[in-house]
Amino acid sequence: MELWPGGPEYSGEGAFPVTTDSVLLAAFARVKPGEAVLELGCGAGLISLLLKLREPGIRLCAVELSAAAAAAARANFAANGLEASVTCGDLRDAASLPAANSCALCVCNPPYFALGSGRAAGDAQRAAARSEAGCSFDDVCRAAARSLRQGGRFAFVHRSERLAAVFAALAARRLEPKRLRFVQHSAASAPGLFLCEATLMGGPGLRVEPPLALYGEDGAPGAEMRAIYHMEG
Image 1 (cartoon, one colour):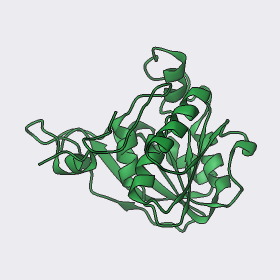
Image 2: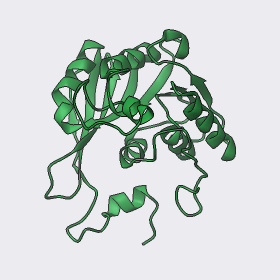
Image 3: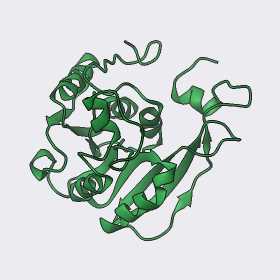
């Protein structure tokens, strides 16, 4: 299918379905020409694909545990004539990661729920994507910190109620939060998600950006949501 009319081809077969949080993360992450970019737990490659479309000059690699999802990611890049290296492996294993200190940007949409919390997923694949039973946020931070060069950026999305635990995990891996943006359904809603960018061995100083309200009071997608999703009008 096309991600939007006239947009890139994308198939999520064998992977977690397209979600708003992944699309928002791809729009939030800062990417520069020529940078080495790593996605941890890429699924079918949606975030990486969107980043590559935004900045074709990046050098992109991705790691995914599921063989079916990794194959779908490779197929998605090929279908759009884009180059990327996709490794089927465990991000907790250094052998599956690029060389240490080699990346300028790392992105990840990690499992949200601590072991024993959150709603039960309908199948094993969804459970692995949603729950930290197999991969904790600290595991993700460790992989990001190993892969990033000093000053490199780690951009991710997470649930608002986990903010304190997430910031503690970042600090343990010398990842300093630098940008924070809450995401809410509407201006009157409490945030359900947050987007964050941390810097490896960065100095203190956090910029809290204006919240992103996805929908207006009339229930229609807001202007920023429409722009992110390439909606007409």
